[in-house]
Image (cartoon, rainbow, N blue to C red):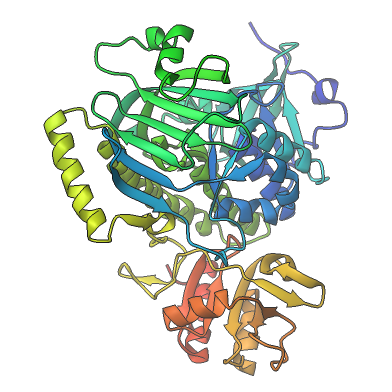
Length: 537
C-alpha cells in the first residue's frame, strides 16, 4: 500500500524550514544533539533537530562534564543558563576492601586553564532543558519533538522520512547533511549497516540515584571507587542533594533481583538508615566499551553514543559526545560556507582514535575496580599502595588523555610540536569591554594568539588575512599596545612551557600548532591554508 506524504506545513505549521533551505538535519535531541544544533546555528548554519520523545528524559543518566564542555556551552551562549544544573566535582579516591587509599584523581588548582572548573557534576534533565531553551535564540534553528525517523535513503544525497508520533503522518526532508545523535541503539547507525567494534569490556552494574533528605547523614566528602572483590562499587557526590551509588552485579545474581527496593536498601545500609534518602532512580546496565567502525557514510555522520560507548569510571560518555559535536560543527559550517569538503574527512580521523584512547584509559581503571579474584586484588593493592608511598599515586584527570594526533593538526609522520592537538588555554583578560574570558572578548573562528614578547610582521598579517585567521596579541601588562591583557599569566605560562611564542587555534579551540618564532607562525599559516584548500594533505 502506498503511503502518501503529508504536507509538512500541516504537521509543523510555519516552523518547518522550506525544503531545500535546510543545511543539516540532526536526529536525536539529547545533550549531544541539542548541543550540535546550537553550535551549528551559532555559526550560521540552517538546521533542524528531531526527537521521538516529547520532553527531555526526566531522570539523571550522565553526571559529570569537563571544562572543554563548559567552553562549548560558553560558545553557544548557554553557560549562564546551564549553571543552575551544575555542582562541584570532588576528587576521586580508589580504596581497597579495608579502606586503604590506593589512588587519588584530582583536578588542577586555580587559576583554571580554561577559565572553568576542570570538572563539574550536573543534573542531566535540567541541563538538557536549558540547552533546548537556548536553542530558541536562533532564527535559523528549528527543533521538533514527538517526531521519529523511519527511513534514511541515499547517504550521498540524504533523504530522511520522519513520522509524527501522535498522528502517524509522514514528512520527507532533503538536507545537505544528516547527523545521527540518536543514542546507543541508533536508527541512523543501524540503517547505514555500520557495525560496532567491541573493545572487550562488558560488566553488569546497578546504578542508584538518591536524593539526600537528612543533611546530617555521614557520607564521604570525596567520590570513591571501592575496589572490593566481594562487590566493587562506586560513590559519587552529585550536585545539590543528589548522591549516586553504582554496584557491580556479581556472578550468579539477577539484574532484576538486585534492583528490588529491599535489595537496594540492603546495599545502601552501610551509608544510610531508612528515611535518610529517597531513591530517585535505579537501573541495571551493562557497562560497554564500543566504537563504530565508521563515523561517516556519504553526507551522513554519527556522534555521541551513536558511535561510541564508554564505561562510566571517568565520566567521559556525554563529555566525549559533546566534543564530537564541537569537532564536527565547525567543519560542517566551513563546508556549507563554501570550503573544500575534504575537511569533513578529518572528523573521524581525529575523533575515533582519540575516543579509543579515552576508552582504553577508562577500561584500565575499570579493570582495577572490577577485579573479583581475591589473590589478584591483594597483589593489585600492594602495587598501588607502593606507588602511593613513592608519591606517584595522585594524578591529574586531564593528564590521563593524550592530545589529538591525527587529522587537521600540524603533524608530520605522527610527530607534533608541543601543545599541538591540546585545548588552547582560555585566560581571563582585561579588554575594552572589561574583564572577560578570552573567547568572549574576541570573535570565534581561526585565531593566531601571539605572546606579548613577539610582534606580528606585515607578511604574517597578510598571510593571516588570506587564510581567514584573526591575529590577537595577549599582553601580560598594559605597557604593550594590545587591547587584551591577561590575568594570572595562564596563556603565557602555557606558551613558555611549550617553548612557543604563538599558537594557531581552530574554531573548536584545539591547537592546530605552536610556533617558536614569528617565522614559524608564518609557516603554520601556510600549512593551514594548504590543508584547508586541499592543496596539501
